[in-house]
Amino acid sequence: MSKMNAALFYGPMDVRFEQIEIPHPGPGELLVKVGAALTCGTDIKTYERGHPTIIKTIPSTFGHEFSGEVVEIGEGVKDFKVGSRVATCNAVPCMECYYCRRGIFNLCEDLLILNGAYAEYIAIPARMVKYNVYELPSEMTYEEAAVSEPLGTALHSIRSINIIPGDTVVVLGSGPLGLMLSRLAVLQGGRVILSGEITAERKKVAEAYGVVDFMDIRELKLEDRIQHVKEITDGKRGADVAIEAVGFPQAWEEAMQLVRKHGTVLFHGGCKSGSTVTLDTTTMHYAELTLYGRYHQTPDDYRRAFNLLKHRLVDGRKLVTETLPLSQLLEAFGKVRKFEGIKFAIDPSEM
Image 1 (cartoon, rainbow, N blue to C red):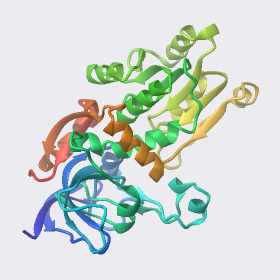
Image 2 (image 1 turned 180 degrees about the vertical axis):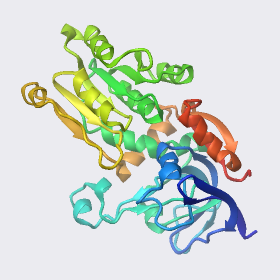
Image 3 (image 1 turned 120 degrees about the vertical axis):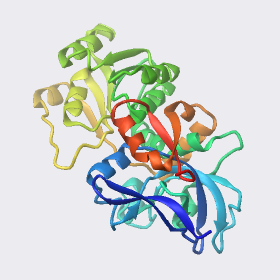
């Protein structure tokens, strides 16, 4: 067989399902049959408006959260064999540029990005095989293993701040990353309040992850949310930590209003290019807030995320609502946009 099913991006709102050539692994590479490819907000935004970094040629395969089975190995590969079940982070640093030499691997100037998970087969580049591929234990499903990539970004963000057991942590955003960040904050001993559009499914997952309080933005206005956080925190001072996981400027501004003096604000959600926020200088200066902007992940973040899922300290199975065939990819995007699920697993072998 030389052809495979694939979703090809031709332009904003123009994705076509076609048969294309199966790639062949070069030296140091792996050819993987995709077992599960997850929906992601980045892929949805790519579908809706394109992406300057991910999509460089048209038409292009896309999709980046996946796991699968090795079906062919390139020359020189020693750590994996045909039949290995593997997961990989879709981006890997060069280890040689200005930022890599300083240990800031997520800002690598020659970051290698892999796309193409919404297809039956994908070739994993040699550099990625060297640093970012892990073999699944027998009890780990393809769906939960594919959660490693987004969980790595959440881990990169949250490990940069200091959550002390007993801290009150507000997470803005009830999507997959908001839920992951909530779980990581709970693992650090945080008392987590989740704010967002709280559907029954998301609330169930959040409660299983240890979230203790909720604020539904459809029911509470901004001033009511601020008041609620103050009412349930020591001395009515506000949260110790606020984590933004939405990617909207108004959420960035809200996060800064939810914390106490000397509080910490973590910006995880990336806003649309050109977005700006208004910062109250009096609060920033006299309340001594600490603001963190965090982006992407490092190979060590990915390794840690994979291990958290492997040992089910974070149960990735809870984040996958349903498995759908490749032909229903766009329907899955629509469901996510309407909050009718958390993540969907796509099976590219089924059209």
